[in-house]
Image (cartoon, rainbow, N blue to C red; front, side, top):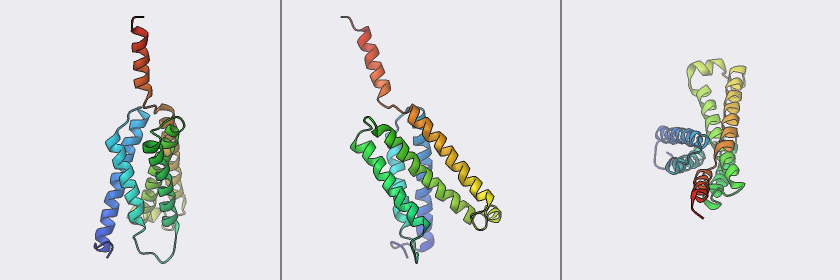
Length: 177
């Protein structure tokens, strides 16, 4: 039992939370690339990604291993994202800090998703039974490259105050003197 749930039920809950976090994170990331701020989706992404990391620590383990390390890194990165977004309101360097930390948190969730896919899905497991074979490494490398590219685009394009400031400047130019 984990938190009053059977291990399979808790595992299912953890997976559902993780998938919601990944989907919400992808929507939030693509919104940033489109220079849009989706506050509800962003909040859902951050909350479920935090829950994913926290619930991961409840699984029984005899020793600290890679999942624990990824969980700690994820929570540290998420703390930075939360502070940049809610504490510093994306001002100045906190905007790219938020975009980068949010992208890293989403990447880590997807990184674990790839690991789990190769462990749990038969055909993928057959391609990389030890998790260190070329198909697994290629999948992880491709995942990293995709997130580096998407993160780069988001840092370049996400300027949530820019549209409002541009509108205000345009209105000021048109106002009679």
